[in-house]
Length: 549
Ligand SMILES: C[S@@+](CC[C@H](N)C(=O)[O-])C[C@H]1O[C@@H](n2cnc3c(N)ncnc32)[C@H](O)[C@@H]1O
Image (tube, rainbow, N blue to C red; front, side):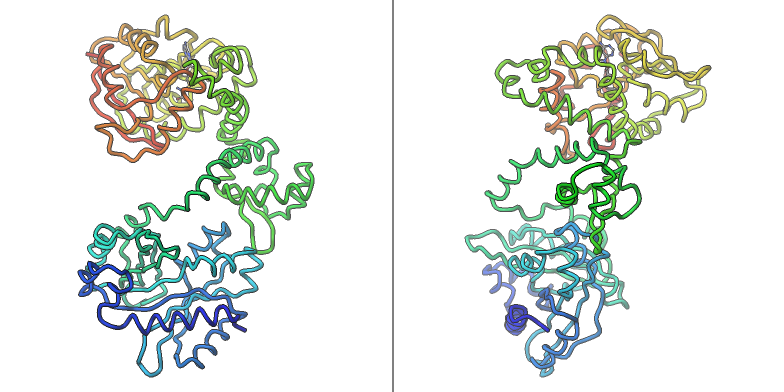
């Protein structure tokens, strides 16, 4: 059976398709005469709508009665993946097919009907049907672009017609003889109308570069009220991550798919509360729910297992750092860290007297260091016999990776006594641990010095002292490798996601700051180092390669 709502939506789609075949239809639809500019590059292809019958046969029967003939059904790729993302369910649980329909008389336009059987939609994602019908996020008019014109037309739509990119993808199951179909979606410019028509440009073949550019562009934003409410609730998501680690949920679920009650039993919690919590954890991507109601850990969730240092980072952020942020306003009023307002002591001194938290801190640092270690050790040459000093090197993760990758290289991890005290050196290994204070002096005579995520912990004056001590310790020509995030500035062209939030984290916790590239260049130059090269690293970090002059 097809619901009366979906019947009406199909009639409307058929009527729009009939009107869209006329010359100049695109410009009329958009209400923008400038669209005539792309008329000779596109032709009307279809009107699309997503419906929820009991079975695909119901749709075919309805269309036959309405005077359409239908083609064989094709599995949907793009719409299925968009729905899975929007409703946070596994793609495999959504059996979306595409039925193409053409008017038997040849008068009117084609329809592209996405079919998601009602029973499975209700089972997998309750509320999906109502939300999709209300928002019509998959309804669109589709325009076939002439060969070789997809990118040019896409840019015209975006730049000249002010359309907003809204995702896209490739479906190899359509037009199989010509490499499938590539589609890019747009929303009409935001005007005063509540309903913004959607458009699809479709082209034969797989246009991977065009698709990559298109889906990387911003998608439509929620309205101001929704956006504000969602920002206000932002810390609930972070809290949910902290608590899932505290309760060991990713470990309890392991590699199984478990009923909520079984998860609750394993973590020793209330079954109903756990079921609600798991539903929220789907939103933050820690678990996903299968069609049978069981939960399984996602790739992100696996990062939060006890054997991964991201679980330590989560603990650190959920405990001391979270508490410190309570005093952010005090930090703004006084210019001193929120951490010191909350704990009465600066954070490195606090960790020096709290052994368990200190170990969590050192392991937490590994989470990100592991991501850059291998890349850094391949990005610059480390000839045999080089000695490397990793200043503020924590438990030695970075230096160990460099030494493991480069035979003949040896080095010293230099850090405060409480950190060095709990680090484990391999007997006879090429990494030594040395305790000290970089404000006093650092080990001398090495060819390479490393400062990984150290300078951002300090203000300019302190950085000057650290850098001058480094310069005093080495000869001209020695190399200094600095790993830091760069705030967007004049010479930065990379879109930066993490540097600005982490700048606030430095304000709240360490008393340091993130800096622009030119600020680092100036600091380093003032201490006798010249920046020769900057290389982008994972998680928005950068490697600044400098030489002692
Ligand atoms: C943000 S952590 C970075 C750790 C490591 N370099 C990394 O990238 O994973 C900063 C490090 O500086 C160390 N540190 C802080 N003050 C220090 C000082 N006065 N002398 C030596 N090391 C210090 C801390 O103990 C900590 O290990």
